[in-house]
Amino acid sequence: MNHRGVFAIAKREFFSNLKSVRMLILLILFALAVIGSAYGLAVLSTRPEMIPNPEVAEALSMGPDAVLFISASFVAFVGSIAAVAISFDSIVKEKLQNSLDLLLCRPLSKRGILLGKFLGLWGALSLPGIIMLVCAVLSVSNVAGMPSKKMMFGFIVFTVIFFGIFISIQQIFSTISKTLGTAILSGIGVWFLFTMFWALIPLSTAYVLGINIDPSLGNITEYNLLRSRIDLFSPIGAYDMSLGMLAGGKDILPEGIPYWAPFLSLFLWFFIPLLISMEVFHRRTE
Image (cartoon, rainbow, N blue to C red; front, side, top):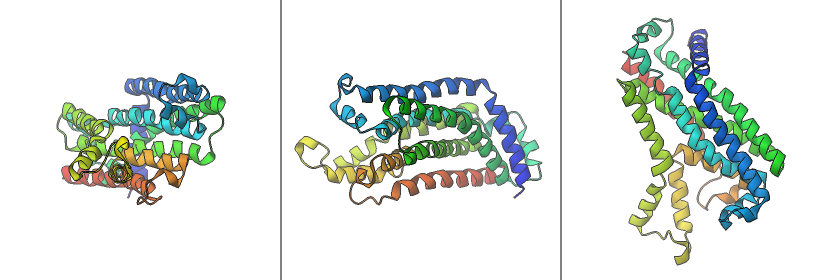
């Protein structure tokens, strides 16, 4: 592979997106979601009497690692839509502007072109994202105490990996779409699936299988195992469980889920959509 060519495309994609108005809007939303949620949860962790939900109050009282873990829910919600927003037109825009042929004329394989565009988009979102995540960690440290090193590392690294997952997924739809509208609607559909509707899948499956989902009616260990297994097939579930392992240890997973499974799932979610997007771009531009 022509590494210089990949770097050149990545550099072009990186600076064009980093300087865009779209990125400015995303940064404002991301700052409110990441830094604001982390600081707000840290404040609430020191004043549990202000939290009406006793379960949330108990979780936040477990320390700064738990605060970062809970704030990661806001990061996943906003970070996934930010990844979709920044990458939905990465390929289809080239088609509509008739600039795709210029890209294909480069002394670079088609897979290398797609990899370069992915790296540029990933870097453009990750650079300001890392700054926001570090600020979130500092805000939690200032209010609730210093999180553990492994939790700070995972909070930043796993979130950056999480960005890459949704960028790769969106690039698949950007490649196969013929219009900008189709590309963005496809990305939003996937976002809705994993952020809004995924929780209904284990509930529906448990109902069909006759598994108890109501704690007041008895033990729900079987349902927790089912839900955890299904969540491994979701990037948000893998991200959440991976951070949960760092925050709460192996006991956070129900018996039957290996401790390494969430980490493996997260990395597979990163590499498989990227490889698929490269292959789809290679075949669709033949």
